[in-house]
Length: 96
Image (cartoon, rainbow, N blue to C red; front, side, top):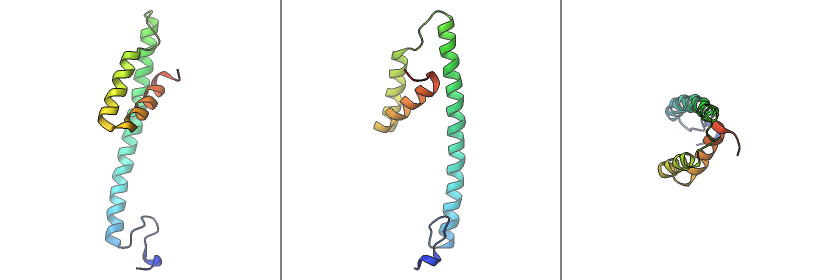
């Protein structure tokens, strides 16, 4: 196969493979948008929880709850789950 036969947008060497890649990328884009939408919704909810807790005289955050979330992500996703959980938590409560 020569380089001029490779589909430039997918990197595939055959038209059928390029079509399959385009279809999979379309689904990936849909999943990415769902993740973004859920991330934003979660951040808004988390911020509201924090404001409600503080308005009632409670603490800014609950470390045991944060540990629970980190543990759940680590158990499901392995070591990278810890970093993902920390980013999600920061999006909801801001930096410590």
